[in-house]
Amino acid sequence: MSFLNSNKLTDRLDAAAKARDAMLERFRARPGADDAAVQARQAERRAIAVAREARVAEREAQRKAEAERRAELAAAEAQAAAELKAREAEEAIERARLAQAKQKEERDARYAARKAKVKIRR
Image 1 (cartoon, helix red, strand yellow):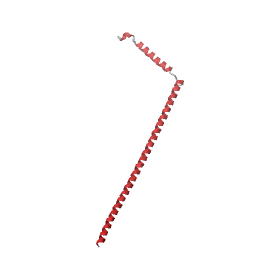
Image 2 (cartoon, rainbow, N blue to C red; image 1 turned 90 degrees about the vertical axis):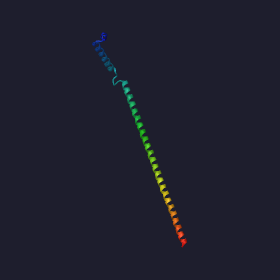
Image 3 (cartoon, one colour; image 1 turned 30 degrees about the horizontal axis):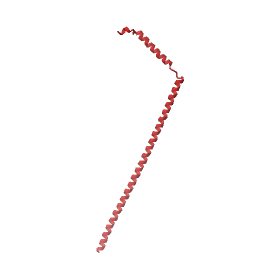
Image 4 (tube, helix red, strand yellow; image 1 turned 135 degrees about the vertical axis):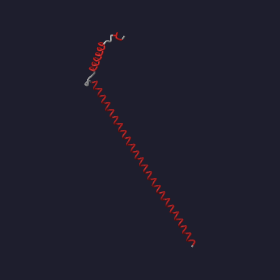
């Protein structure tokens, strides 16, 4: 029998009004923007924000420097690889030229030997 607990409408309305008054009193008791403690907290928050921005900027600068360093290394590696390929190509051309010269010498030697045989027969 809950109605026996004297929880009538007026009691509930009074309790709600007291709660609203207490909330309003707590709101009014809060320090204003010109209070020293509030200004100190705001200054501390600003300092933290500035420090955070500085750290973010420093990390971004480090990232950019690292990216530039990696790009330079990649360019140097690419250049070294290109130089190596060019050197290998030159060596391959030289080997081919030498092989061709050797073949020509062998051909000329065979031709000279044939000519010598023909001269001997006559």
